[in-house]
Length: 327
Figure 1: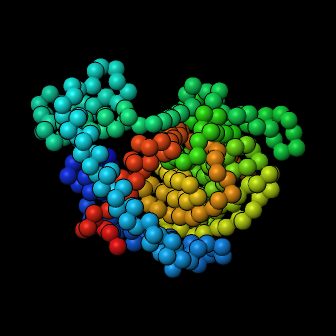
Figure 2 (figure 1 turned 120 degrees about the horizontal axis):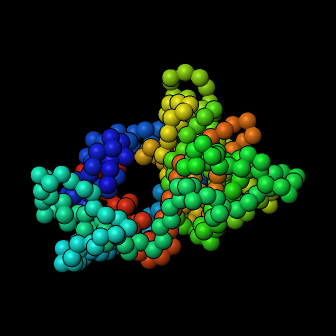
Figure 3 (figure 1 turned 90 degrees about the horizontal axis):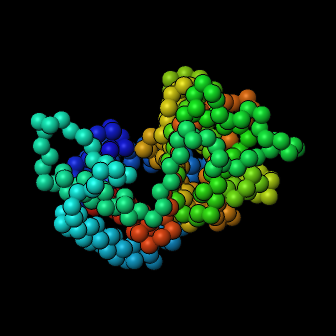
């Protein structure tokens, strides 16, 4: 596990209390930027629930959340004990250990941390990954607006088969039946935006999000645009400023947490948007781009959160111990 802020590996003891940041200072620094983004969001969202109402709604579930956190912590502890008693992974496993030089010996706690990772990964309900090298057979074929023919830009490029240039919306067919999941991908802005969709059942029903360069210059120049597509009609378009500086040609890692009616967006590990909507209950992920605004996507991963273990792991990732940036 790597720190979302500095990219350094998180130590074993730190990972037991915080799986996102390597120290309390980095969590606080990220929280300050995230809080600013959320304050800006509150100022621009006419239909969003007020902070006071959110707190009132959260209180009845407080005790249940604490119990679930304790249960999750004990479960991971049990996985640790089991991992120490099990033999190491055999050659050819899906998640091989990180190779080290022969002169470096790994300690007991480091080996235990690797064993826990192997057990958790092997027990994960559904984890999908696509890097586009195998083609677009798993992606829907979508016609251009007003036409039954496929997008002539074709997405793929013979010069760079590991990358795609989205055109008309295509949806990952293996993800369409899912409801709760975490989507993560790496993309590149070539001109001014990076676009994606989630909870997409078809080209007429999905949530759309765009990461935008809103103005020239090195100052914070980013924005986030989102809207809902229902039965082919666009609803509730909102654009928010972000405390980020985006560059053309740079790669960005985007993560979207989709849980029931709540959606959280991260850019390079930083929270940039958190909002709720109940109109679309199920659907997969996809990519699209405006005709005059090209972009590139290198890969996409999807972790399902509907099963018991998926929900437990999702909840455990939100545990914040005292001293680790808790409010």
